Image (cartoon, rainbow, N blue to C red; front, side, top):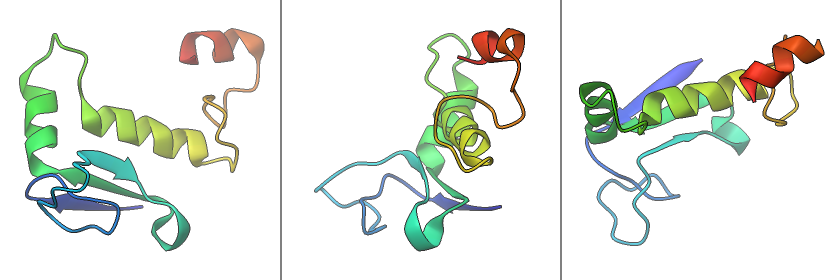
Length: 89
């Protein structure tokens, strides 16, 4: 897995600071599949504030874990038994 850190928000074409759409973090798709892209600002903010539940890095990392089994279904790939799935969701 590779990760990219942009200095600030970006758009779908990975242009930094674009006014068209401000993306703070994402898990890549297509040729970027399996790669996490974050803005430096969102990474810093997510770990600075522990009470707002707004951590972009953790959010995007969980998407990578979800995609690891090939199914984007909201369940960690190794969580196959019901008692493991419920807490994950």
